[in-house]
Image (cartoon, rainbow, N blue to C red; front, side):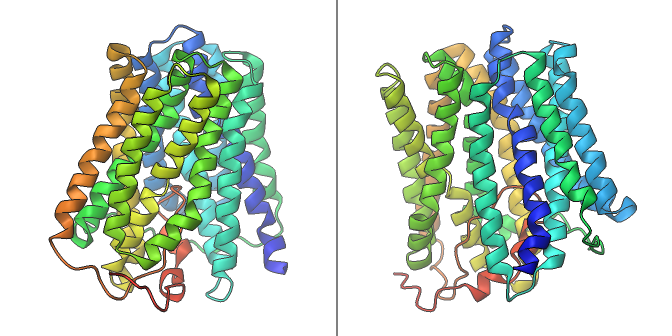
Length: 415
């Protein structure tokens, strides 16, 4: 209980960061459309966010080592706040793209610092409990961030002011905590090829997950507006996706711990393709049908990254886990940077259904690649435990620590 109280400041900062920074991603899409931006220009904003996110993941551990956790957190939060506040000063997509690099940088930097701080406070006895609460906080904050845009007026100075205030508020729990800042650990080496060496299927799957999640989160609001949803319904549309993804974690985790994870990835990819076709098919059937399709899409697509990560770790040595987690996050970021711009230009050229068509194509390729990999080697007998992996920083593998080995099922029942 004492540990949870000491970590409460970190969890509160996570919630406030989600509301202040993660809300900007969908809200910029809605605001951009209100200002007359094209879908391609909205896609540029999504790609810029994930470019900043990648830079923040790489830079944050090094900045922590130079100036300490609290100062680095304040610097990243200030960058994010400036990026949010400056939006209504210059209503230009290229200027907004620069601002979005700043908010993406701040998001990754702040999460890296929070996770490094958490890592220093946990041990193998309480790690599972702490990480479990962190996952709940992460998903809850993500849902709240999507719903928040439903009560904000698009392209309004006041709305961006509210988001900036939430960013600033995230400073208080971290800066005023009486807990002593931890010693700065070494940043993991970034070896992207390690993911391919351990599991070619996992490497392709996390890229596909980056394409899928980033395209939906960045261009989903454009899709919603194009099919007739108002701002409040767009918020529910994005929230339904997060709810579906959260609900999927337990049943998918149960399957991934008992059956060949490659088959689970394949079936999730097939289900994602089916959910995309469903979403395209219900475009004209009303808001309720669109919301249900979004929830089913989240149910199918959201767990792919975590199942792929678990499969990659099945083939890794214990001393490779932190670097492997960083490699998987890097590949996810590659897909996330590229997909918003590609999806947006397809939507401009062919209409809103093109977003789901792109996602369906990527996941069809993933399913086909998975079938090929089934023939390459047998599934390992000893496997790590499935765990939901927040896609937050290159240090997430260090926070998860030895939980995979300690939480592994005793009888995995794989065929």
